[in-house]
Image 1 (cartoon, one colour):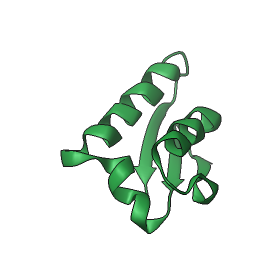
Image 2: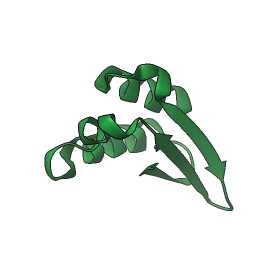
Image 3: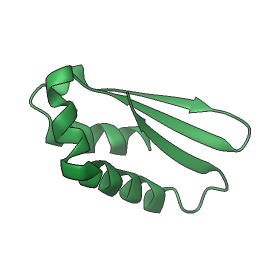
Length: 75
């Protein structure tokens, strides 16, 4: 999961060395926190949040077999 999100984010940004993904597990929720350089925020979020929504959809599909809810936060 973390590797997939990191790969997607690094493919989109100009500064792939500044991409960080942290996984935080709670009771029945897995939260993936994505951090990118300030100048790359627009590339990860996209116009009207379309790229961010697509990233969340791909991660949700990849983790469909798990019984925990997965949330992707762009910080």
